[in-house]
Length: 416
Image 1 (cartoon, rainbow, N blue to C red):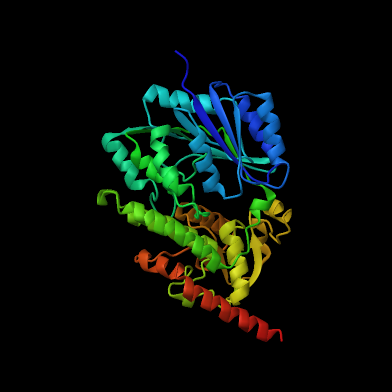
Image 2: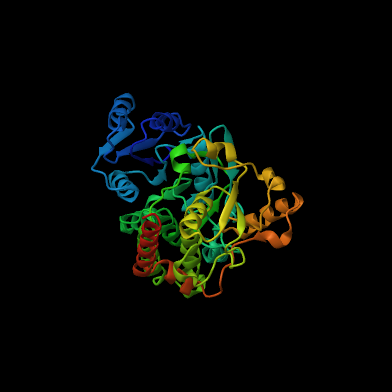
């Protein structure tokens, strides 16, 4: 009996430098019964030509050329044209190991699972780091699956997901995915994977979690340097996500506390994207002890970059150093980041650890203590009990814009 058709949907936009590697990794999969759908989302580079070239070389490849509509729109277009019994997504600047799809299909076929949730590998220049889901590998159904639903979006201490949000390291039965992907709000451009993954998980009768890390997520230099858009613009995008997911949560059983899980999820993104700065300081994420003091920011990821930007805008404190283990990679992006060990030579009042993951924060804290940093100088993210109130502060667009305009005018007058 022939293996079922698997549709691999690849959204592509302005990545002609990488897309060939991605397509080659798919056509060379050990699982051969594939339908490869390349969705050209209106890019102005050579991606459309590259897609058409590959379609001539491999009869399994279909190309969709469309006007630019964003990632959600591209994935919808691919799904509408797909015919496979299973669906896999691969982003056009990533790549997969040769046995990736076969491994996921074997897991689904032997267990009868509706969805396979894998891990991933982050490729950053010459470094590769493996990640797996916090929920342990295994087959989940009946009562065990209900426990997954209770923890899939928010698992353990604030904040980490039980099952990673990404759609691209998973294999879906078509009927499980069709409604969640088709219904998602196309305006969502932050957290769009979670808006599909978690409703799809709730559609399942059986799920298998595997520790396969053969999906390679490419951390590009241009993606390392986060956009410097105003937080009011970011908040508007997050509000689309929050409103959509809360509306979905209202259709689910109270037993799974979806609203609480979603609040944790969106709040974590709000904190990172805002650098922890919210209007009127209704709840300072790190407390207030560091105000007006000399500080070191630990981590140059999204959260750290936004902290560095927002703190300089608000003049909340004096940033004397910015440290990260991957400092040299951030320097390649023209960010003034130093090795973690340089903290032993600095004079400072506080170190602010820029992560919302409490487990990672504790690990970093232990490392800083071993480097001789006083415990009283280490500040971690604090999260209030009333998280729903805090998220409303983050997503109150009118107040945020008024605060930004006030700071802008103050900045203009100070330079007049």
